[in-house]
Length: 309
Ligand SMILES: Cc1ncc(COP(=O)(O)O)c(C=O)c1O
Image (cartoon, rainbow, N blue to C red; front, side):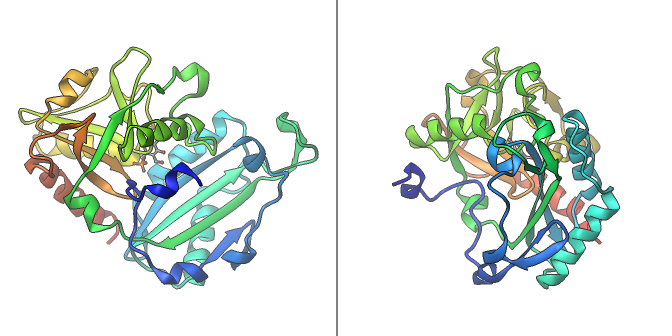
């Protein structure tokens, strides 16, 4: 049995929606039932994790912060010489087709994946990917479970760190998430829901799937950003704080300050802001979402509304 079969709380828990059993998936211009949606075993994404992806959410028929997600995707693909083969309008059109084929309008999560394509031989060299890229769009009806907003989740600090940008830059939203998966397994073994990862200097950095913030004496702190995903939600939270007179700092800090924070929360496209109940067994604040988390969450909700009107 997989170790994760025994555990149910993740930061991406969504309400069960039976409509997802019959969703249609976009693969290279075709839209097929999920049971028919298949990629080659020679695909470089499958073989090597050689691809990039974006997670986006649909609200009222509009993709929130689409441009920001495209900036990250195109920057990442350029950095690894992966030619997407279409521009952002082409991607928007493919997503529109997929949403229409599924009759989806709101509370939808999209995973857009672009790999270097199908290889002629099962080896690493990028030149062996002769037909590509492979573009897949999975959209699911998806609403985060209420528990994530109210109860909060537990974190364990783990030995797996975020590396220096000249090994594999944490800004790559690559198909290979092994660094994060190893961290997640370590958190699981420690009995926590998600891993709190440090940077190579021992400062608090990020979690395995989301960005991480603490609140101390009315100030909002997050890492410098040097070793973590350049999260769209992370940047929106920083911008919202600045626009609304909330002191916000991107800085180095250690577990010492994280343990004694008044509040802590995660950010990500799926869950927006998810409160942290405890870190390494130490309860944060009263263990539930505090006033700053509530305030930022409602500012973010308004921003999403304005962005998707
Ligand atoms: C490791 C990691 N951190 C943070 C995030 C959150 O980023 P965003 O706010 O853009 O969803 C993601 C999402 O892909 C991620 O994979």
